[in-house]
Image (cartoon, rainbow, N blue to C red; front, side):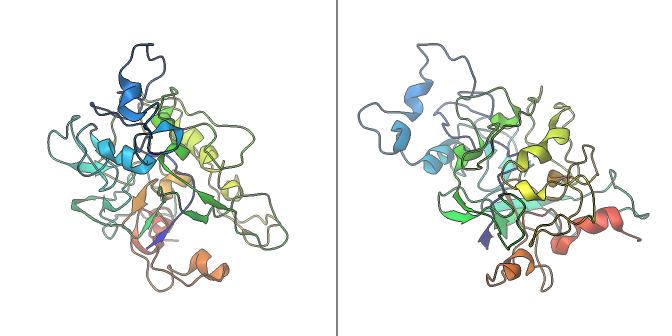
Length: 318
């Protein structure tokens, strides 16, 4: 598995300062306007005995996983195994987390059903698995450096993107900001000069029964803004046209990625945010790695369907 870097679109609750009590992204301790006597600060910070930067009690990812990991009980979301629960404290049966997971995911990536006609497919289905399966591609949150593919300006000479080190707090604001999934308008290390704020959801639901259904009806601005947010890191991936030449030596011709409706070309329509168990065959596993001279890996590139099956969800029959 090769860790993939593309600042996560629509990440689903891997927030930085997860407190010991019940927590969910843009709820619990991750809210703006905490009082001056809140106990939330001490759940994550120590003034004199901190063991990690920012006066954290422990390393950032470990701290996040204390609520949002497999053994945590302070949140309804387990972003490691890609499952969500009906209530905080892990009540009820596990369900499929919309963003997948960093270690496992519940995407039934081999059984998608497309629609004939060579058109966008809002009625398609990517089912969920009964149990989480090991992922083949993820964003990394362990602080190690990986290539942010497509980061940077258009270049006439081959440039693949700078190396960046991501953690949970690179994309999420642990103190709350009123944005969707408490996403930072400017992800850390992205190098973006301006940010993208995505309006928050009125109802927090982090799970799905269909991985092709990516629109969040309780957050009307989400799908219209999320591609722009992804492009704060993947600057050269955002395109308003298909097949047009870009002038870039690597990303020279691109598919459109900015449409704002369910079933239309958009970053989040094809990819999940945290990690995917989608498989990659001999042809579909060599993509960007072979261009960059990196040994090919069985990498699913955070896609929702095996072997670039996302293409046939729209183009089946062409």
